[in-house]
Image 1: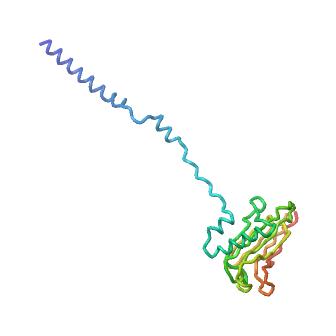
Image 2 (image 1 turned 120 degrees about the horizontal axis):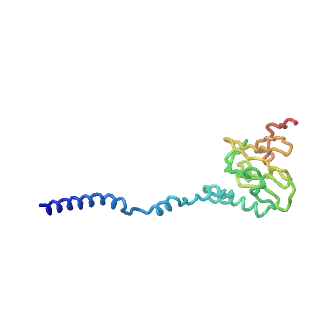
Image 3 (image 1 turned 30 degrees about the vertical axis):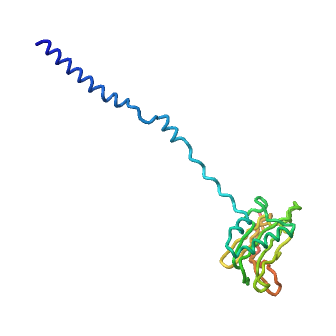
Amino acid sequence: MIRRLLRFVFAVCAVGALVSCSPQEKAKTPGPSTAANSNIASTPAAPTPAVPVASLESVLADGPENNKELEHAWANFRRSQKYRLAQPGETNHKPYLIWWGTEAYHGAEFLIAIVVDPSRTDQNRYGLVVIAAPESDGGKYKIYWVERERDLANCEISPSSGSVFFNCVSADGTKDGRSLAWFRSKRRFELKGLYPSRSPEK
């Protein structure tokens, strides 16, 4: 009788021990490594590459079919003139604009650009050129000089509907806002004054 009782007690203890051990074993069941998880989480995402500013040549090359003639006209300008397009740091604003209209102009899209004489280092080494195809001047792309030997480092070309504005700020704070216009009788582009203003004296 005592033996049976002892066996019963022993059996109960053994079962209890197994039950109590089971959760511990479960808790010890290896899952995904914490170190591995932390490594995955801490790995920085690959940075998004910066989109480079498109060059004028690439803009013309990727443009619509009717811009091919403009592309060739710009290439001819680069070959035939001592000027080149202003580079980053030489102007405070984007140095060119391809646009479809300005005062009194009828024709295909045109290019207006701030260009630089690379053989000079003075402030007046800039020029402003338009490459356009006015219907009243034959409808073929030609080079039209608007400004030469001017300080255009702080000038901005701004489109607005069927107009183009050219706004400059000089070193002394003088502001000069003008609009681009085609003069059929002169067969040339000119800048028409909008408002001269001077910053107040300090």
